[in-house]
View 1 (spheres, helix red, strand yellow):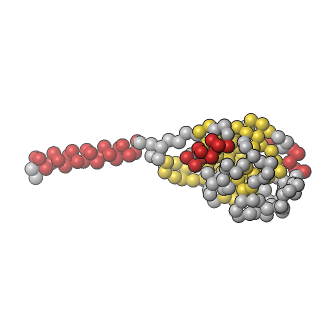
View 2: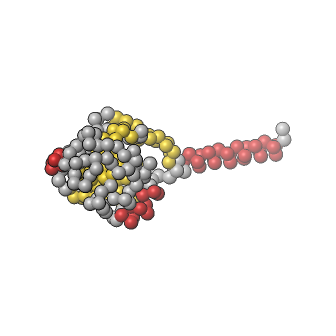
View 3: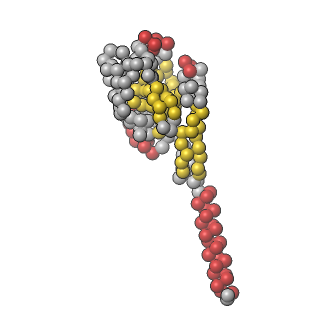
Length: 189
């Protein structure tokens, strides 16, 4: 084998190695996210390839939610209230697919990635199936609470989320909570 050929292979090998190192260190990372569901059981949410390091974008209006939500995780401050399936104007089924009947007190949804989580009603700027992390919520002892948007409501507009309870009477304990941190971790189904 000639010297030229060995030098060519050497530099070709260096080029491939450099490309591999570039790909590895360019921000592509594989990670696993785990949380605990409402019963305190750990569950794996997802394992995925992330192209770039994602930053959570803070937004301040429903227009910004619609623009930035599909691009990655977003965070906003808003109001948290509660509702029951027997509220005035409620039909007992959630408004989003799979139109779960919640009149039997079933206020949870079993999501494939997030496990058993609470049902939320949200503004139409956040699509059905979105996973929301709720922080700074004193009723939950300031521990994060995960919910899935499966309902709408005429009174749920803007930066307000409505947490489903077994009955309207049960919502008296929650009242109206302001300056709650909401993070949209999954955008729709």
